[in-house]
Amino acid sequence: MRNRIKELRKEKRISQEELASAVKVTRQTIISLENGKYNASLILAHAIAVYFGKTIEEIFLFEEEGSC
Image (cartoon, rainbow, N blue to C red; front, top):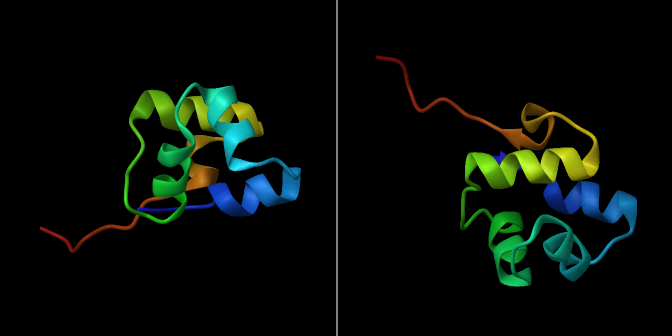
């Protein structure tokens, strides 16, 4: 799953630490999200979406892995 967190954070001119504090996670979690090494829980995805004033789907880009 890709996401637009880094892009949105830079548009808003906030640091990883500021975002982490706002959504109550560590800076390391934000780094992992931005690098695609961690997928956010639904609760965290919602908190990030609310923070940026966007929907979860506008931030987190789900890619299907083949059809059944």
